[in-house]
Image (cartoon, rainbow, N blue to C red; front, side, top):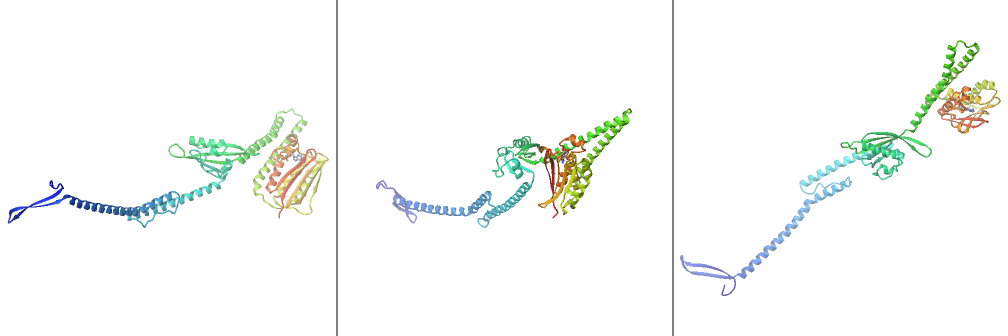
Length: 466
Ligand code: ADP
């Protein structure tokens, strides 16, 4: 309204009577009132919207929380399972049907996982038990030579502390450089390697066989290696003894054989030999054949005793009677040599469990040696007694005696202090080896004490029959 200078809303309508216009009706309303009403309406709408929004938000939050709750529980359970908790499970009774199905599937996966883990644990325990029960050393490393497993014997041989943190490289834990190098090479070259090494310890040396097998991985790259350690010291020593024995035996056999061959050839080819020389040669031949026969006899008894030592036909044997018998058997030989032979025996029998003929041979050998190595005018005493549950038999002579350094070796096969002298006396170097074999086979011990030039004392101890 220009006149009122106020914003107005006008409404004009024609007024009619019987369809004939008679005038106009006009209404005017100031606009600020409408504005006021509009403002009120807007406020109402905004308030309503805000309340509706807040309500929707709240509802949404509650609903969202309700639907994500099982998911969160499942996430938590998965996390716990990953951390190693076996009994962690998702709730199967909350949330929508899909959620419950998901939880059930999740839990069944958990059950299966647990079963597999238990099976793996069981297998691992079995493997550990097998490995620790093995006498061979076993060590496993990964491709970067970090120790995955080491059993007791391997830790001992490689001088590894068994309580070390697993996962350290082998070359950091063991100072046996050859073993570390062999493992490295086997992994690098991806092939089985084997070698023997000698470990020097306090006063002894041990021979160890090392075998490394790479663990096959993808392509040409192994995922690690297994090292197996085997102590072969005893085996190698036995092999050396056997080699020496064969060499010695052949040598011992060859000497009389060469002499026999020479004598036989001369006798056969030289027709000009006079009767006396012929006789001398024949006598020599006879002596050499005798020597050969004794040697073969000793070798045979040694081998028989060695193979029988485990299974001697043992029965009660009275050592008092046995010693008396042996002494009687040697009487003639000792008298012939001008050596006195006395016995100091108890009044009671000394019963042991043993093989009569083997024990007889052992005592015969000791007495035979005493006679052999005691010059004329000397004396020998064989005695028997019991002490501390053992029968003790001693053969002492006033003979030439044995040097201290040789005393420890006289029981070795073919060992002789003076080869030429022993040979001259018809010795083979096997007598005391036989004695030792028999005594050990009866659970006993044999020892010698001797003063060179004064005499020797051989002592046998055998457990008495209780
Ligand atoms: P051998 O057949 O040479 O007598 P043994 O095995 O019986 O062989 O004895 C080994 C060595 O021990 C002998 O060669 C000898 O040097 C020494 N020996 C054995 N018994 C005596 C003893 N009673 N007195 C001195 N030396 C002995």
